[in-house]
Image (cartoon, rainbow, N blue to C red; front, top):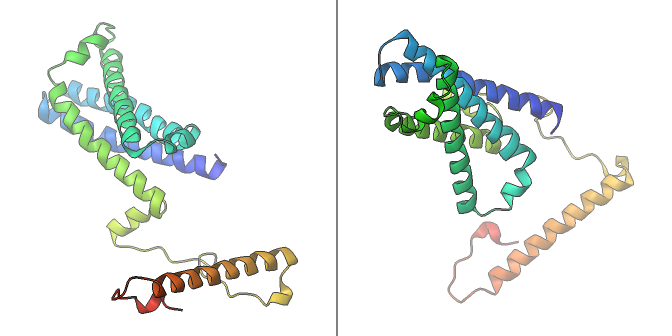
Length: 212
């Protein structure tokens, strides 16, 4: 992982923790007791859970173990990710109970806490939202979803604009060879599409844009 990508991942991790630490205190106050202690508990739990889940998703799932996860099927990958995220949530929440109370017995007791029946669905919704944003950033680029939601668009720079094809004589032999091989591949692909369209079953309509 390069330095630029590592900085991006750290910013995303900080954003995950910030969002969780902002929403969780409100959730605790609304579903438990309207006290400062519950709000503080929400901040501590969200910080620990966000740190654990964010590190796993950004630096393990999409980092060190990315190749291994990509070799898995969709269903297997979904099951493993869901189980890992759920386990990290339970561990982070239990650790938060110990941090605020300084009582180690709160760690196992948190797994049977009645408030868990509200916390689990809330975390599931929040986790799906985070996964959706991360997936959109992976597909269309970082911050693109934010620009879309805000109704603003980034002005393209000179590097983003298409460059005209230089004359063949000004290209290096290696670049010229690569360019010619790509052109030959496109021509072969067009001929293949044309042959497939001509040899299709009788009466099958062929789109005009597929004809060469």
